[in-house]
Image (cartoon, rainbow, N blue to C red):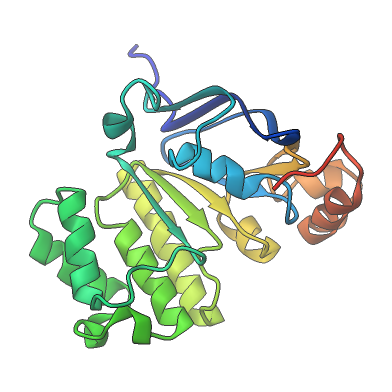
Length: 252
């Protein structure tokens, strides 16, 4: 029997300090192929800091990050080649058209058959009619869809999504969730998904991690975890975690 494939993402004892502030405190977790993992927590829990370290934007104070067994510090280019990202706070260049944005990022990721890939994503995310529209002129929902299209360009093995359906109407959000879930199932991609929408998290995530004050304090199946901790719903559990004084200090 062949050994199981390595996790698409492995985070080991990850820590980040800003001066005396300990933003992330020894966090460890993994994302397996074909798995959607929710990274949850209140504002200030350390989620964005953790994601920025995974993306290589921030240098960890301590710990290790590996993508499919490749250490981020040892071979950054190889590690990040199969990764992509979308977040509401990271809009694409507004002076480029929708098509130009996808083409530039497609060239960065060295996407094969780029014209065909762009056409497919413009159709999948209902952006074809905005092909020649500058990204800065799009509505917030349209910009969110463009960010998601860009994130899917290279058919990533690891997809990092930070509030991926923010500013999108419920019907479109449902379609996007279904599309991402289908991509994960077919392509054996893994997803790290952050959201404050607990309905969305319960609908798409196989497993959730609750981060509070820079530490993972709870982990499990979003459908059963609330009852295991005396809460009626995932929303109730989120509120409980947000109000508990766990650890010392505050995280970013």
